[in-house]
Image 1: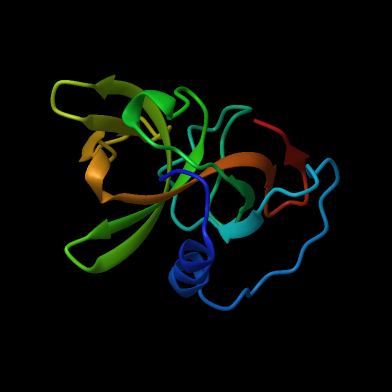
Image 2: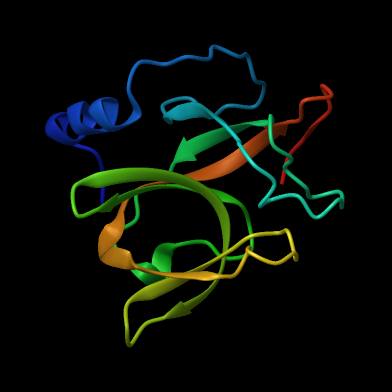
Length: 144
């Protein structure tokens, strides 16, 4: 997952589909690729200041990553996962790596039942976006 070629750019557009949200955001870095992602569910809501409740929008900056060691830990990321040809989009907080197994531990903020950590093999990660801004349903915003 290094720098993006034209072919990779087309693949990214295919994976993300047609944009559904056009929201202005300050402090974007020129030349970087940003995308808004809607958050569904309450896996990232622990009712603290860092919570990202369902209905929030998160602004993700594409993060070219070549290996597991380059994935930033302890901050929310959006993952586009390709699992046997099926694609999934997850908003999680990676908290740990297992370099021997080449896996990343994806953590939900919600401590409730059903929100267990997910160990995901790096090979299934198609794209990673670092969350630069969160816009909650109540209109408040924060930078993680």
